[in-house]
Image (tube, rainbow, N blue to C red; front, side, top):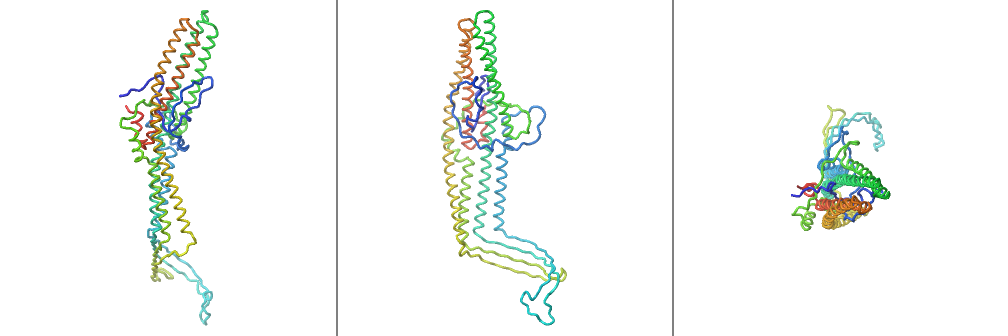
Length: 479
């Protein structure tokens, strides 16, 4: 069993976003130089940071765990909502295609008053026969039915079914990406809180150093430059803390937007992710295999290719003759009680002979879409392979950086303690202490960034394997 690491800051994790989206650097007077850390995969689309806020803000402060944030994100994030509406639109298109191959039945009751000029229809004038007949009333109660038998329409319907399947798979992929975004923003907020904690500890140490320098100056055992140097360091640490507090508030706003919290809702984060290694059964080979079988975006791409193949087939089927049947039956007369039944039955064939290049153009367009979707599918296959490999490379690098950074933080704290003892004993001035304190701050930030990068690679691996929703607790909060 692994234990949470407690080094004066929360253990961090992240996902698909790159470090370029971390909070910007603190003011120039407080910048600490940290080692570079590896990034994961490119940032997600901007739409995943929006949401559809739900409900009204409740009084007090809401406790928000990572699980709660994920549930809200999967329900209210804009990308999920839009993917759901996309499915409905695809289903409507499929239903429209289905209507073209199903029989139809309509009832058409009508009543009309007519007056007819017989001469206009070529009837010769005859003695005793009026040239204008009417006005007279016609009542017609009729049922009409029709059926079209078309190979083209049937294949278009099948293509629509594949498009619906692709939209459903795209929704699953959008949910995976939403999980990544929510994890990212949630843990970036934890990162900001961790930096506040570290900056507060450094500010407290700097204040003690300042008080000590003042006491020594008053006792005549230290020059005024020691007081000024320690005061500058103290205020620099305060400036750093203020900066991180602002970043923390901004990250909370970003989290609220991503998961659809009501505007103005106050909340606090309750989860701290543990620094756990990968599960023992997760390897590069198993991840590549899992990704090829589980990635919803690749399955959606395959469905789109199949839909395009059916569209090409439908376009070619336009050359095949189609059959249509229509029939109607009703009663017609001057009124309902004085009417007689009539009917008609028609069977017709439509045989394309010359369409002016319309069919050829439709085939070419459908073929072009098919080739495009095939290229996109193959590109995605390569990208999935790269995602998995990059995640493992980042995991290996970040894991080593975490170990070195943790050791370096311990050494920096020992160095600071020894420098403080030397200054208190009057062996040296406080320049050595200030430098040691900056080394501790630098080591703190390096460890935070390394832990962030390590967990970012784990979250990126979740996404690359296509199991973000199922693997959060297994990868990030496993006991």
